[in-house]
Length: 187
Length: 176
Image 1 (cartoon, chains in turn green, brown):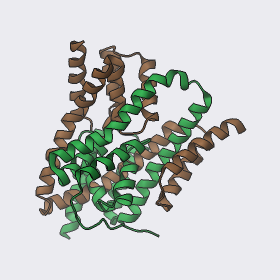
Image 2 (cartoon, rainbow over the protein chains, first blue to last red; image 1 turned 135 degrees about the horizontal axis):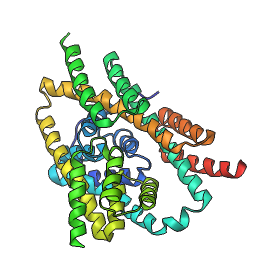
Image 3 (cartoon, one colour; image 1 turned 90 degrees about the vertical axis):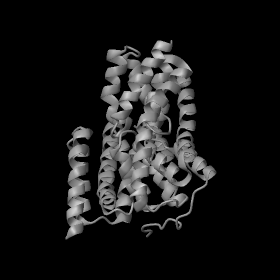
């Protein structure tokens, strides 16, 4: 079984690699970009380890804005500065924008066909599984401490099971997680 | 026309700054702004734009791009997209710089360790909420779980799971 895949020792990722990497992430990113971002960044290109990817995604999650867009900003800046940021954002957005504009032109004619609807729903059901499976795999590879399990479970229960609104949950969970992690370190 | 563009820019730039959790978390507020306050779209057009954005790949942001497109064409698409992306990305840029510069500081390392489980918990929650939105029968639930297992045990391209999900669900349409 594969466990935490080591990222290649820290090298600077070139502008072209960043652009085409994120172009692929955007193009493949059906039903949520995060699983695809992980597949390409951690498994395919090995820019980051699972832990580094989760750190950046975690930062992207608690800032305003989509988590994978924020992650693209941080990864772009770390490797190629502001130009890298623009390339990563352009890469991630370009193809989806073209595709969605094309879809908008044909949607009304096509969506009425039951086969098309069933195919879209089947793919969407699979992409929900994709998100779940990716999260479980990251948990397996990162091997969190007991405390980290508790923090993650609390967040999952509040948002996923109880469906509490995100902003207040984040405002309570993040300071609690920071305080608990700090306390655990001090012991 | 310029009035509409300015209004699009203002609306989505403000939303950008409060969009913790991305566009899906903002959905009720976007609906309120676009349908109720500005009357840019009808309820039905809003729902079908959402379905379309979900059928396309890419970040959920493209739902907002699509709203811009339907309100004011190509310039609307560009204005809405940039208005939503620039404020939050600028914030991420500076936050990322600060965290990188102080990466050896113990407080930053505590922060990063604390955010990892938060991100993982939220990702699990978002998978579950996607399942709740999309899965409407036994077949779709099974597709979701099969895809979960596929990603968990293999490193193959997840597109296999999506393609199989689509085919299985179309086949189910003809079997049942």
